[in-house]
Length: 236
Image (cartoon, rainbow, N blue to C red; front, top):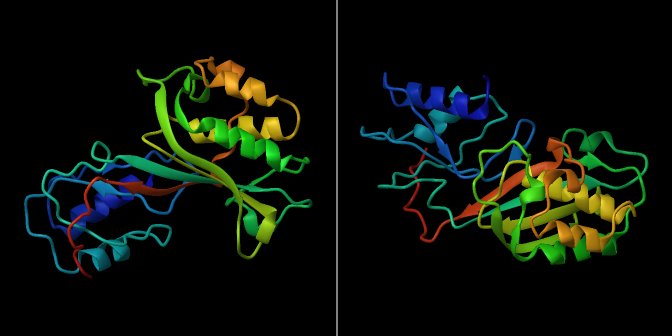
């Protein structure tokens, strides 16, 4: 399968001049079509790190991938050592849509109530059972997650207030969790679902009780936090 992870693993194998396969462990999940602004990955390598490793990796991968830094760390696991992750989902609310948001945001053409979105976001903060917000067929064993912060905000920039961003930070996220949360919150905001119903879903309701899964192109993995700052990155 042609994935970002597969491309990076092959590029690492070439840049490090090793016959051994490189297996990446990534900090956060990104389904097909989802974007990543600040992904972190770890891998095991016993040899010496080339001085120009960053330049080599960017030369060996397509322009859709940008390696920003490589940092040697002993015993580091990008997924297990993370203490929180932040995602952003972008919704284009204007009518008509915009070609500049194609494959970068979800265009919602129907009228939505901003206050309802804010109330939904406020209800998410804290520890809840998110069983309703991940596919029924799942490998997850634990469905409780802690949401540290959640908010809707108007995006600044080219499209101005036509783009709403949902930003959420939590200890970890399940498959499709943010996309189902957004899809369900939009149903509250367009009047097809009540706020009380949304709040009840956070008590361990089942997947069919929640709303649609928002399309992947609006979702961005923004950043991941660790308990200690990493060492200085390798230059180049």
